[in-house]
Amino acid sequence: MTGIIVGKLIPQKITLWEFYLARANRIIPALAVLCCTLLFLGWFFITPIDYRALAKHALSSITFLSNIAYWREISYFDAASSEKWLLHTWSLSVEWQFYLLYPLAMLMLRPIFGTRWFHSVMWLGFLLSLALSCWGALYKPHLSFYMLPFRAWEMLLGGLVYISPMNLSPRVKIVSLVSGLLLIVASYLLLSEELPWPGAYAILPALGAALVILANVKTFLFDNPVIRNIGLWSYSIYLWHWPLAVIGVYYTLPSSWIFWGIFLSLLFGCLSYRFVERFSFGRECARFVLLFRKPSVLISFPVMLLSAVVFVG
Image 1 (cartoon, rainbow, N blue to C red):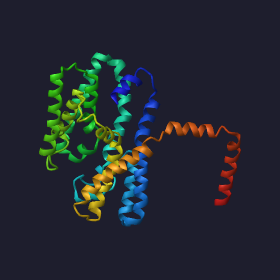
Image 2 (cartoon, rainbow, N blue to C red):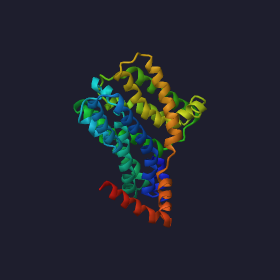
Image 3 (cartoon, rainbow, N blue to C red):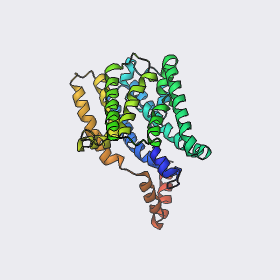
Image 4 (cartoon, rainbow, N blue to C red):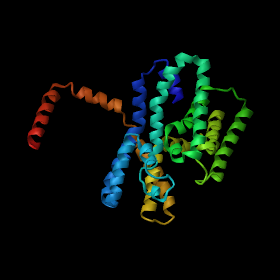
């Protein structure tokens, strides 16, 4: 995102509207299909009380306010949370809120501070958000978990990696790569839900990811057809994995469902990427505008609308 903003938005190669439209193209269609699918199937297969909650959560997800909705409810790790079909979209809401504010902040601050001091301003924002997260994890854990100010540092870290390029030697790149991978593995082995989160403990996986990106080492481990495809499907896999996990809890399925859930997450992620994510709001809006330039459509549309009004009346 920082690369797009610095390379295209600030030099005015694209407009702010085009930036937002590109983010909407990337995020909204697949999310909308997921919500509609769950609402359709939920009508038949879940209880009315749970369906009412699903409808409320679907609305908050599609409006990118689900982090606020879940913050007002209960802890992410409570037992009931494992039966919330769209719980995972809290992070998507935080991400979207960040996308809305981040380019505006960069457009306003960069001319004021210039390139030299702008880096310092980003570091300041990163450190303030990190400090707020560390405090919130101890004293306001739910607020810290769900709200953007406590999470912004994790996304700003990626921006700092981009705007602070380093000419690393091949040996240092390998050290950076291995260190990053070790931090990620250590996070998996050492962290648990009992620890205050995100806070200081979240530095381990975030820094690990940053070091891997900074290393920029092309190896077969990361640069192969399987990993590339999983990367392409990753957003849709993220969308589908949690509802599939909830199915296992909701219907008390055997532990073997975990393997089916992983397989179906990859399958649905692939299908969603192929048939949904490539949908373009810009292209379809352009077609819509061209359609209404035709005289036959201009004449027939008011007639159809009038007929519908008469019929409903």
